[in-house]
Length: 321
Ligand code: UT7
Image (cartoon, rainbow, N blue to C red; front, side):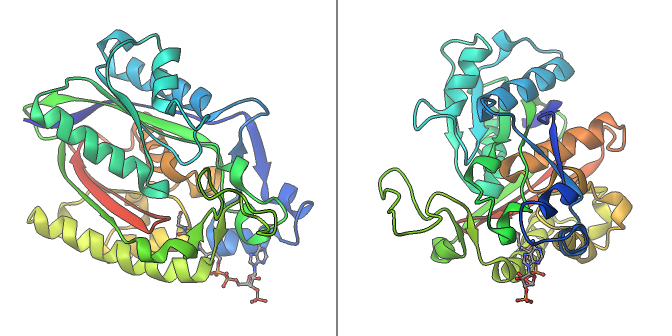
């Protein structure tokens, strides 16, 4: 028994912020952002529009593409770093909006690796036979935890949501998931403040993303190269068996390095970082939905998803669509 993705959906907020708009806010340039990251624009949630709102829209679209009704859903997992409330979980809020009652609903927090973690968890629920229709969502309003005066972070991120429906199947779907973390890197990429620790007044920027970008970059490239090897080895596959790379969208240079490691041409890589920026846990399901709807990824093809993020956390999923 496998868990298979039977539907995909995504949602991007209406407001678009171009690099040129950022030139008016911080000391940056369109040229620097394009060359160092590949980002051209990103979407930003409207005032009052929350992670739940984005997640619900993506979920409705995924259910529609799977030919399922909300009432068919028996498991909801939301990967997010930017929940609406401390509690209830965003998954419970999504459940309420979709008028679903009684099924388990919970959030997973693994920052940019969140969707891969959520998919790994849902895969185990489905394969065990205990659940038959999972909604797995990555949704973020990262714009709310950015310091808009810090050019080293505010140009990198965007808001959005992506979702998949996962159902049991005798034909191969998810072939394996690989999840990792190492908390010793806590301070290279983090929001220093929090509910329990508080937001000390003297700790400037305590409520916002802080990143030592070039150190994160170096470790990300290295680690993603290794996770790709681990994924192929465990499945006894060759690089040439992979049709598509659907990577986390943090930086085009990181994506290109992983593609090179897999001997993949860039036209076998789904790239959305140019249009979406880094949407953290939402980036992989957003990219997947874009490529599926454009008819680029075809049923039966083999794809590898990979992500790296705060924690550090990292992971991959190998699957057949
Ligand atoms: O999704 C979770 C994981 N996150 C990532 O994987 C992100 C990993 N890191 C990166 O993608 C890249 O390191 C960045 C895009 C964040 C930065 O690129 P970089 O090539 O590593 O640049 P850098 O941090 O080494 O900075 C180079 C220069 C510095 O100036 P000096 O010291 O050389 O004079 C920065 O101050 O670029 C400067 N800089 C900027 N200049 C214009 C930093 N941010 C900006 C900016 N505009 N927005």
